[in-house]
Amino acid sequence: MAVKRSLLVILALIVMASVVIAIGDEPAVKPKVKVVRGKRLCDRGWECSWSTYCCNLTITDYFQTYQFENLFSKRNSPVAHAVDFWDYHSFIFAAAQFEPLGFGTTGDKRMQMKEIAAFLGHVASKTSCGDGVVTGGPLAWGLCFNKEMSPSQDYCNDYFKLTYPCAPGAQYYGRGALPIYWNYNYGIIGDGLKLDLLQHPEYVEQNATIGFQTAIWKWMNPVKKSQPSPHDVFVGHWKPTKNDTLSKRVPGFGTTMNILYGDSICGQGDIDAMNNIVSHYLYFLDLLGVGREQAGTHDTLTCAEQAAFNPSYVAPAAAS
Image 1: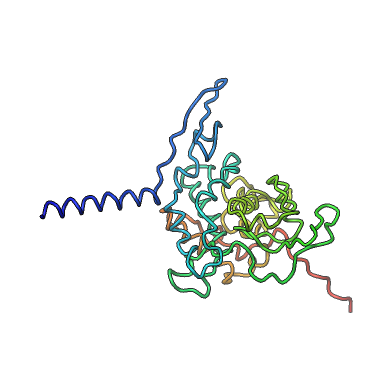
Image 2 (image 1 turned 120 degrees about the vertical axis):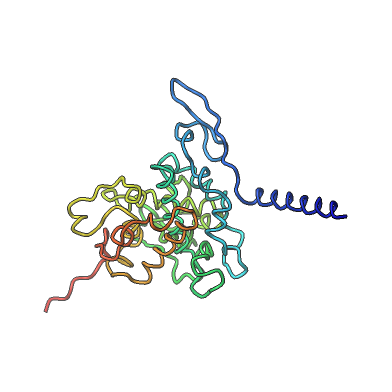
């Protein structure tokens, strides 16, 4: 009888282990390799195919399903607004388009993991519904939304009617993992992704891969050609000018906030809106096993004292 019970326990453990493997830590795909004209090319199946960068570390080598689930553990809770929308594979499908450009593949493994933590820290803070929820802590509620719930307007700017005209009946409210607003942003990002988001902005809230693609596009591209992208300032590709130094803009996570949000949160000291984004980044560094001690100093981690790259317009004071 005791032997039978032991066998049952062992079988149960095997089944449990199989379930954990199935839904958790998926093994990294071993790449296929071939040499073409002296160049070593690799193929990893659905993540990337026959390129040199596939021979190096890719995102699935160090960031797997169980880690995504840990970072966004409450996204499918009953009170979430985008239940069963966001998932790991949609993120990897979206990231695969940008990995050859350096997204999550720049530098050593630590830098790569830090970039994923930084990007997803922004995503979590901008899609969280954790303010009024305590279960699991406020940092566990990223990807709760995939769209603005109660838009106050349709975000159609007629100034761009010649370049990015609003489609009849379309609304350009916030959608995506890093929400995009306004017809011109849907048009510009749609051009970059070769998707007709101007005519069909609803694609961003209907397809999780597109929702992640628009966010990664924002991370990989500057607001203006003369300025750096969040990716460049984070991985160290950007060299500050004298004016940047005087404006206290330095490479690091803080300047990614400056590019993405400007003076809505930067240059105002350690305000809650900025600290919330920083807290998500630090939390994700810990969950990924990198550790928040790798985040850098206060000056590189925050934009508390930075002047905005693109200050909000302030009307000149009336002459007295």
